[in-house]
Length: 174
Image 1 (cartoon, one colour):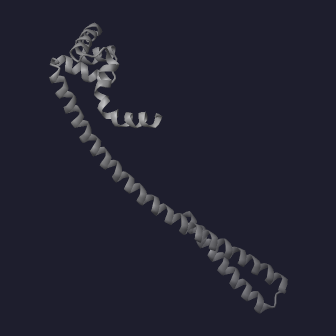
Image 2 (cartoon, rainbow, N blue to C red):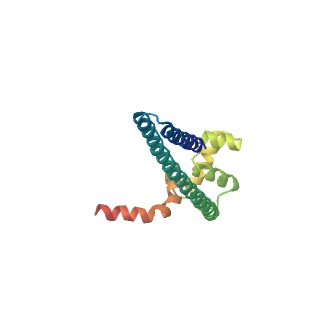
Image 3 (cartoon, one colour):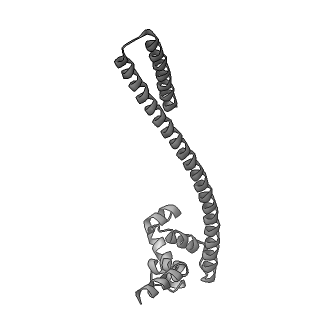
């Protein structure tokens, strides 16, 4: 908006100067003065044209960026819904595996929190139990899952997701 006002003022200034030059010519004002005013009108015209061009260019860029932003928002919405769906499927797969390993309800809760990366202390606070109880449940979980600890337990669930990428890494190093 500010640019439009500036361009309009420059245009009006140029128009009034042009009328002044015409009046000066009719009044017989010295040619040097008319030449100076003509140069000022020319410079004002150049500035007005440049600002107009720049305003139009920026306006087009802004519209283009707005369209790109709308498209990006749509892609994010699609990705978010896809991620929600994938998360739900993954949670179901994890729950199914917990049932296969015969985890108790408490062990399932602790196992989910372990997979989310919470510490024993944090899990104890969330479940309002003692940290020692959480450690014992974690040991039971690791035993039933036949893994040797938290990292192996978490890796067990991630292995299938990174297996294809892992194979690409092996092929790149050979």
